Amino acid sequence: MKASVIVQNLKCGGCANTITSKLASIKGIQNIEVLIEESKVNFEYVSNDIVGTVKEILAKLGYPEEGTANSVAKKAKSYVSCAIGKIS
Image (cartoon, helix red, strand yellow):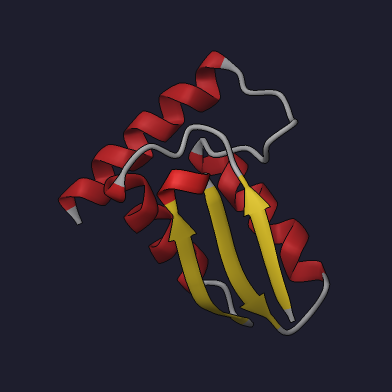
């Protein structure tokens, strides 16, 4: 099955690298694609409960789903995640 999540705070390749590496560690997810210009994360999954897990991980990284609260703390986390992605 395929899913897409539109997120906030997605700005560059560093963000995309962090998101891709974190989601790749989840069993049952494959073909992860991060579209920076659209602030969209696409992926394929095998179990319905994985989509909720993906959204939770994205929020913890500082990339909450569009339409949810985007606090200063989440914005700060996204900058840290971005920096880590640039280094990796």
